[in-house]
Image 1 (cartoon, rainbow, N blue to C red):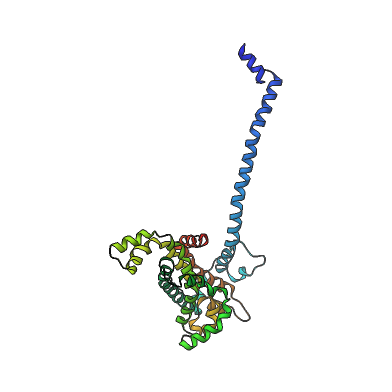
Image 2 (cartoon, rainbow, N blue to C red; image 1 turned 60 degrees about the vertical axis):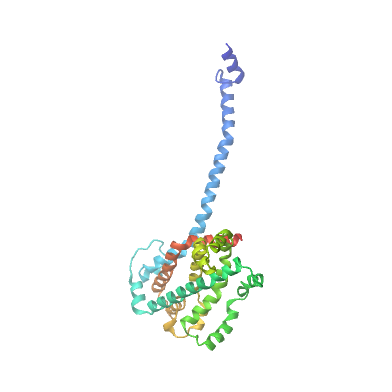
Length: 311
């Protein structure tokens, strides 16, 4: 009796009217949850859609270049272009390495970019250590002036650098190009290392000093292992900035046997005809070392930029 009374009071399935009311209440009870689920799904789609769109925009040119490098010439210039290659050939790569100076340009670029990376690391690490770990007069002024060279566009520095390299006997020399690249890469690399050096605990240096270690020994054996991600970020930045540099390489290098890849690749474009397949193959080969480098130290590079941005 009490059970029937409670059923009639709560409007459960005791009567048709009560059943309809109960169903309505259940729908109302589930409505917010369903709306929340829909909003969550829409939010999830938005979260995936934007990165996917950005990835598509970034990856599309690389896909187009790679597929063009393996298509036969008629398909490369076909209108409308084929999204998926219908042909496959390696003749563009064979022509690139057999009948052009591309291997020499590749060796020149590896020399310039590799040496720039090593010298930049050798200069920026002790510079960052002294600026951000030691105290001496004028330190703050040097820190503020560190990125002063980036105020001026590179084209304005072209004539002074041309005259400087001429006076030093480094014009039309690959080491002269290394000298210029280091001039631009080292200040930013030193600034980039700031976040890593400033977060090293002071107690580490004090403990090393108590054990009789010199500053250079402390830097080499105690500090550098801690700031290893920063070293990776500096290495990849110095390599990339030199690997893709075109303006100074096209002006300061005169003899075509000393061209780097960006200048040499531009020379493949003929005056009246462009070999698009060979040009695409050259771009793919030029991109390969960058992809390999990012695969190893790309995470350190991103972390370094993020640390620098936060600081």
